[in-house]
Image 1 (cartoon, one colour):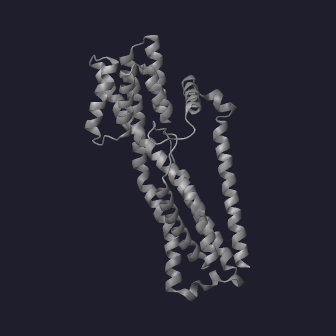
Image 2: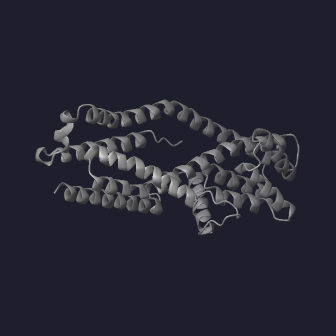
Image 3: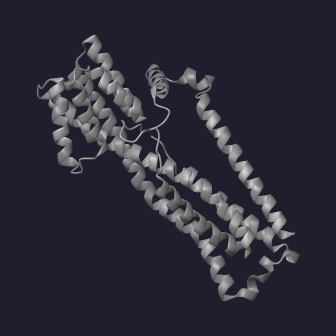
Length: 314
C-alpha cells in the first residue's frame, strides 16, 4: 500500500516538474510581452534583435574543434556518468533515510537523470560569467591602446599580449577569441565581421552591445576612441556591481545550504540514535510515511525558493 502510494506520488512530482520546465521554456521562447516591448528602450530593443539574429545563425550542434558556441554546453560521457552517479547516491540515501524502502531508493534515485542537465546549465552560466569578466579586461586594454594612438588592428594585437599577462593559461577563452579575430583579419576578413561572429557566439548581452556599437561607429565614422572608452566604462561598472552582489550573497548562499542540510542531518541523528522515537514516522498505521513525504516536499521547496530569492541579475 505504502509503496504504491509512494510510486504514484513521485510520478506525479516528475510530471509536475516536466510541465513546469516546458512552460518556462515556452515563456522564454515567446520573449517579452506587449507591455515590456513598449517599456524597453530603443537600445534594449536593438540588443534583443541582435540576440535573436545570433540565435538564428548558431549551428544546431557543437562540433569539437570548431568555434565555441557559448550558448551551449556539452557534457562528455564521463562527466554525465559521474554527475549521475553522484546524484543517484545522494538521492538514494535520502530516499532510504526518509522511507527505509528500497523501492523509494530506486524511484527517488531515478530523479538523478535530471541532475546532469542542471549541472550542464550551471557550468554554462559559470563559463559565461568568466567570459564577461575576461571581456571586461580585454575591452579596457583595447580602449587604452586606441587612446595611445594605435590603429584598430594593432590595438587588437596588443590586447592579446596584455591578456596573456593577466591569464597565463593559453587556452583562456578570451585569449583564444581575440587570437581568432586577429587571424581572421590577417586572412583578409573585415574586423566588423570577425567581431560580429564572436558576439553571435558569446551569448552575452555586453559583448553583443559592444559589437553593435563598434560596427555602427565604424560604418558611420564616429569617434571610435571615445565610444569604446565609454563602452568600457559602462561594462566595467556593470561587472563590478555583479561581483559586489556575488560577494554579498556568498555568505547567504552558504547559510542556505547549511539550513537545507541540517533537517536531514537531524532526521539521520534521531533515527540512528533513538530508533524507537522515530519508528512511528516509518509506520503506515500512523500515517508516518505521509508526514515524511510532506516534510521532504517542504524541504525541497524551501531550498528551491532560497535559490530563487538569491538569483539576482544586474
